[in-house]
Structure formats: C-alpha cells, structure tokens
Image (cartoon, rainbow, N blue to C red; front, side, top):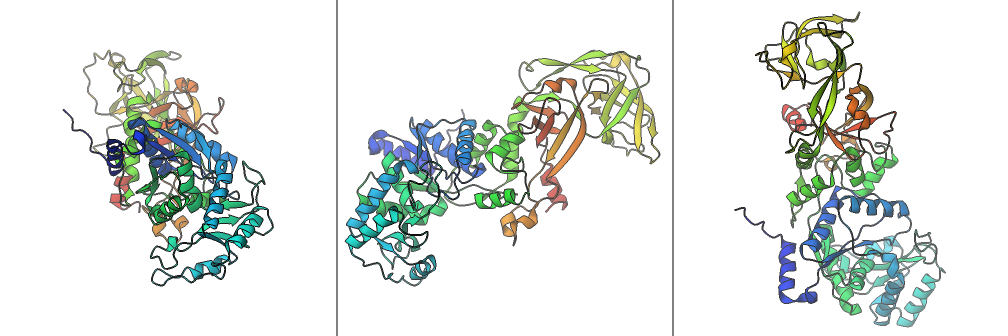
Length: 559
C-alpha cells in the first residue's frame, strides 16, 4: 500500500480553516496576472497551485487580471493568458478585472481620506523615496502629510477629473513613518496616468497601486486564501492594514516560494528585453520559458502539471534544475508519442542485391509502450534508403556497432544488411554506402539465425518526405544567468540549429498539430504550430531522448 502524500503548509492551513468552519467552509482562490506580458513556467506553478487547491477542496478559482497600469497592458496579453490557463487544463469560475472595481476602489480611497488615513502628496518620486528614510532610519513627514481632510478630498477629486499631470501628485496612506517595514511608511495608493486603458479607455486618469488594488479586490470577491510568492511578504502588513481600516471582508494573504529554474530567466521584464532586442523570435519562441513557447516546442499540459507537482510548495527560495522539467516531458512523451523514423544528416544506402523497382510494405507499431501499441503504420521499404551519416564509418573502432565495411546491422523493422563498399566525392566525403541484405532476416519473420549488435533507423529514398527540423537547446549556457553582470552575456549561441532538408517517413506527411512524435534515436518532436505548412513541414525538437546536457557539463564542454 502506497504512503499517503503529506500535506504542504498551505493545505494544512486550508484543512484547519475547514475544520473550524472559517469562511463557512468555502475555498475560493484566485490567479491574478498582470496582462503586461506572456505567462511563463513560474506562473504555471501558481496556476497549478491555485486551481489545484480549489479542486482538491471542492472550491473555485477566479481569473482576475490586475490591469491597473494602462501603459504596459494590452488586450493581446489578456487573450494569451486565458489561452494558457485553459491549455494547462483549468477553467476559472469567473473572469474578472481589477478595472471592474475602479469605482469601488475610488470610494475606498475616499473613505480612508475621510478617516484621516490618506492624503494627497505633491512630492515627486525622488522626494518621496528620500522622505521614507532607510531601513535603520525613520522617514520624514512630507509637507502635505497634515493637510486637512477637506483639502485632500478636493485634490483627490481633481486628480480624478484630470486637472493634474502625470507625477504631479499621488495619494498616500498615512500609517507610520518609523515602521521597520519600509512598505508601511505611508505607501502610495494612487498615481496619475493619462493613458488609454485597454478596457476603460480614457474614463480614468488615476490608477490604484498594487498595494491598494490587490487586497481590496480579494476582499470584494471574498477570496478565502490569497496566494502570493515570497517577494510579497513585506506587503502583507499593508494588505492587512487596509482591509482592517476599510472594515471589509478579511481576505488573508499567504506566501510560497516562486519557481526559479536553471538556464533561464523568470522575469517578464527581462523576457521582454529578449523579445524586443530580437534575441528570440517573439514571446512564443520555443526556447523561451513562456507557456506559449513550451507549447510550441511540444511540451504537454500533463508534463508541466507533473513538474509543478514534483517541485511542491515551499517557504524558501531555491533553484530547480531544468533537467527535472525535461525528465517530466520525457516520461509523458515516452508513453504517448508515436514512433517514426527521420534522417537529419543523410547519406544514401543502396542494397545491391535487392530487386530493382520493388517496394515492400513493412509494419511498425505507433507506440510500443502502450498496451495495444496504439495501432501501426505502413513503412515503405525499397532498394535505396537514407541513413544517418554518423551511422557509417570507413575505419571504425572496435566498439562501433553500426555500419562499416565487412560489418552487419539490422535496419529497424526491416532486414539485416552487410556493408561491402562505399563511394566518396572529390572532397573525400562519403556519398553512398553499398550493402547486401539477408532475405530471410526480416523483422518478426527472421529465420537467418544471425545476431547483430546494432540497429539503425532509415527512410526509403523514393518515398521519404522532406521537412525542416529545428533542434532547440537551452537558451542560456550558464546555470544561473542572473549571476552574470549582464544576463544576456550568457546566451547560448547553440540554442537553435536549423536543418533545412531532413528526410522523414512518408506517414509523417499526415502529421497532426499538437501531436508528439518520437523520431527514433533522435528525440521527441512536434510540428511547429506557428510556421509549419502542409507543403513545408517544420518539426521542433521538444527534448532529446536522454539528458545529454548533464553529461556535457560534467565533461566540461558546457558551463
């Protein structure tokens, strides 16, 4: 009998809340992305956590867009976020926006002013930063801190009416300038931004800061467990203070460690930098850690959910190995990907004793890992084949078990062949390999009694389809790119290799989008959803069959 999985600290909190009847036994979480970029694998952890907890405890999860900065936010990002959440396998209870609450939040701010707990400050950003003091020295009151309630109400109303320029004044909470937590030293609640909002247009020119919009939106929705990453721990006292002073539903914030992944960066600002400077081909470049990039590369929702489950929920930051994410996709694709043969660096193999013009129809299982093999496909076999260049050596070492003069190998799903000759071009490059085949050595019907140590893949030259194949690798060559003085200095120059004329099984002409394939001995591949066309197939390598990167690092070939 398997051991029951232990609870993480958030599950322990929820179970205690349910036991004591807190929130009337409800569990309502939310996933609150800002629509200023595409979601990445770090967001996937938060998505899986919020939606997973709600599912486990018969609760619900809202998708709420934190759209309080019209300068950086776009409808394109909203749509991409919705697509990513659904692709991961989750459906929200309600689709909401902080902008839905702009009028309510404004009224909350007025309430604080009337209580003497907020004031309009005409100081500029530098003056405000200086007045906050340092972690060891208390802040200094701004000249406007003791302005009358009446004047604050008037000025705040005029801010809303658009009478002032961006940065001319802000609304601040009046808390404690000597608080050891710098965030509690009169935090900003509202700023002026004359910009068109993607939903409200130019209706508003003042927008709530994160500290003001976040907790109050949670409260309006009656969120029971507001889950944030650890960088928001210092913000929690502000969250609690505002809810207490506004006397609204007491949502509670809980913090967990965000996902940090090796060989990549997990900052939307830096990812945007890579996009704008064209180091990558957009947010959905298959080398990017974005969910759309992972999807385009061939990662499956199941593999990402499994990865998030394996890393768990912790209270301390740590660096998770990219190898674990790759392990999860290999585990999933080994069970689900259909096997096919493809040749990326071809040389011609001619079977000299095979009848001219003859074509056989061989058979191969789609997935031998499945109980029923998931059916089979027809593989044409003929006199001339394409094989991988590295499967032949003119002068091979003793432990080379592929083709070399005088040696035999098995052709996958087909016959045993023995090499007896080869041809070179004027530059000394091998162009053809000549073999004879053993007619009674056919796979599944072999009566030859021969035993060979090597098996190689191939495609029939007269039936093969051409395709473009893109071999993707890790975007950065350094394990922790952020440790560099400039993170872009550690970009991996070999993160993409494009093979324009690969040969693939004829059956792959019918390859489906969102379907994964194992190219035998080469790795797992999928059609590129963005650039592949019926008359120009483009396959992306999702991951190699084994973790070759770790071995290369050990040898010192990669840093």
